[in-house]
Length: 234
Image 1: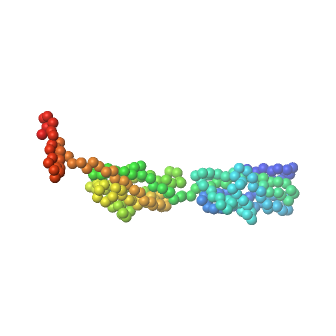
Image 2: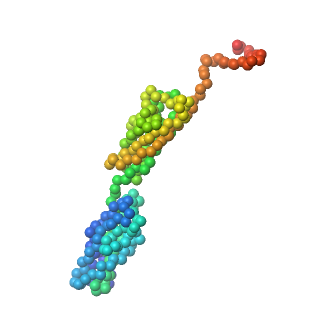
Image 3: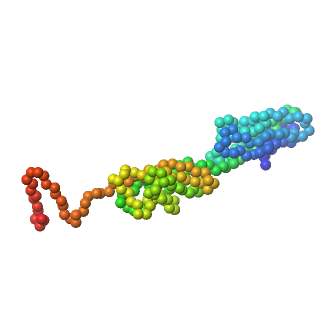
């Protein structure tokens, strides 16, 4: 309930009714409610509301409707409650003031970005884990599921338990196609809102030198070549 008080010498109760005390978030110029007046023992009330208080600059009254100003949007995550003072003169010239609190209705919002804790993998390792997938979402404590498109290189990867990884028996090869893979990943929140984006996974080139169990191979030239060895070596 709104708190009520009165300025002036009159002992009459000041009643400024409002049909609603909530505003929806993310709606430009969203409405709150419509004013009505109950000033006992007076014939009429001047239906002119003056707003003051901590958050008055964000609101306006249009044809007795309390609303956010055009260009203003409520954001539950930033501010869940607005405090206002509504004032009106009764027909006897007494200023009637009423304090109200406008609460912001928290609405589900679309995720904004998909992140992976790592974007590099070593070549030659089958089924290697790339990293953990996380989501940036305006709604705190929202949960998300992931899906991976088969576009581009998606058929080579899978998502298991929130981790992006190569499929079993698939290993990266730096030289086969290109030094990175392109993946199109979708994150969906618990109420079905989703967003998709491309992620790149880079392949780290390994050491391609050939191991001949300690031996070295030397390629000669067209001229007369000679090898100089060391004691106890062939």
